[in-house]
Image (cartoon, rainbow, N blue to C red; front, side, top):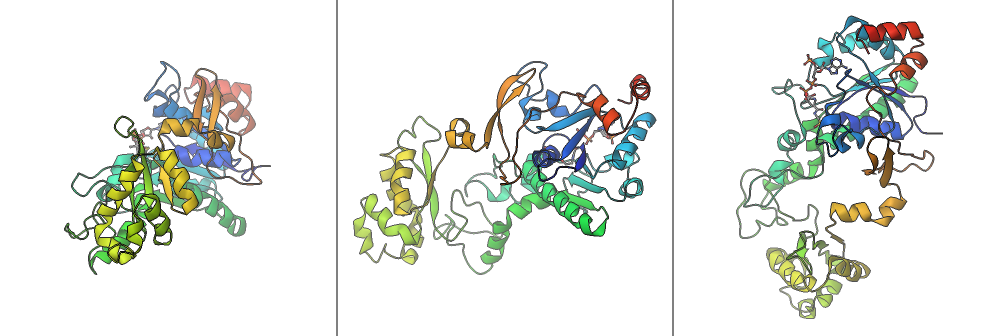
Length: 414
Ligand code: CAO
C-alpha cells in the first residue's frame, strides 16, 4: 500500500517545476497521467540529448513512475476527451505560460463546473502583479526571488545557485499545496485552486536574507565578510561563503586544491567546540589569549581565523579533515562533487541515488525520492515513452471502446 494510492493526477506539467511535483506524488503512489502534445510531447524529451533520438536525461529524471497519453487539447475532439479526464481525476496540475489553459477553454470556473472535487494546481513565474503574464525559467526565478542578489562574493556579480530552487523548489511547494488540499477535501468535499509562484518559492527559501535586511537597519551584519572593514549598502549584500546562522563558517582549501576543484571543506567554528579546533590546528595559544578566546574577540578577525584553519586543512584531504574534526564536535562538510555523490554507497543503499533501466537508453542514474516514508515504500520506475499508455488510459480510465479510440486517432485528437 502506498500513501497516495487511489489518487489520480491529470498531469499537464512540462519542463522541470511541474514535473518535479507530480513525480513526487507518483512516488507516493498516485496514478499520474501525463498529457502530452501528439508527436511532440514535453519539450525536454528532446532537450540536452546525450543519445540521438532517445528521451533525454532531463526528461527521464523528472518523469519517473508516470503514464503518458498524447492528446491535442486544442482540437474539439481532444477537448471532449480532456473534459472526461477532468471528471475522472482528483488533481489537475499544470505549469504552462500564464493563461494557456484558459485559452484552451478550461478556466478554473469551467474546471470546477466539470468536477467540483478537483484540485487545480499551477506553477507560474509570478503571482498577481506587474509581471503576472511573464514566462519564467529557473534562473529568472532565482534572480527575481532574491537568490541571485544574495549569492556570490561581495566584490563580484550576482550568481545563481546550482540547486534548482526556482523549478524543483517550487515543485516541492506545489506538492505540499496539493496534498494539503486533498486533506481538506476529505472534510469539505470540495476541490480548490492551488497556486505557487516561482518568485514566491525562491523568496520563501531566502527567508533568512529578509531577516538580514531588517537587521541591517540596526547596524552592520557582524557575521558577514564585510564586517568590520568593508561597507554595507542599503540591501542585504552577498556574503560569499559566510554562514547564514549565528556561528562563523567558511570554505577552506584542503590538500590537492591546486588540481582538484572540489578539494575544499566547510568548517563551522562553533564556540562550543572552539577549544578542540584551536588545539588541532596548533593554536593552543588562542585558548588563553583574550584577543582570541571569546566569540566576540574573534568576530572582527574571522578572516584571519579561517586563514589559520586553512594552513592546517591544506595539509590534509577533505575526508581526513572530516574524520579529525567530527569527533571534536566541530561541524564540517567536504565539498562533494556530483561524481563523488553518484558513487557514494550509502546514497545507493537508501535509494537516494538509483540506477534505472530504460528500453531505449539502457541504464542511467537518477536521484530517487529524498522523502522517506516508513509505510509507503518507493520503487523508482522508468519514465514513459511518448504516448506509451494512450490506449490503456482511454480504455481503462474513460471506458472508450476500440472504435471510439480509432476515431480519436483518425481525427488527430490523440
Ligand atoms: N495540446 C495542445 N496544445 C498544447 C498542449 C496539448 N497537449 N500542451 C501544451 N500546448 C500548448 C499550450 O496551450 C500553449 O499554447 P498557447 O501559447 O497557444 O496558449 C503552447 O503549447 C506552449 O505552452 P507554453 O507557452 O507554456 O510553452 P513555452 O515553451 O512557450 O514556455 C515556459 C515554457 C516554461 C516558459 C512557460 O510554460 C512558463 O512560463 N510556465 C510557468 C512557469 C514555469 O513553470 N516555469 C518553469 C519551467 S522549468 O524551467
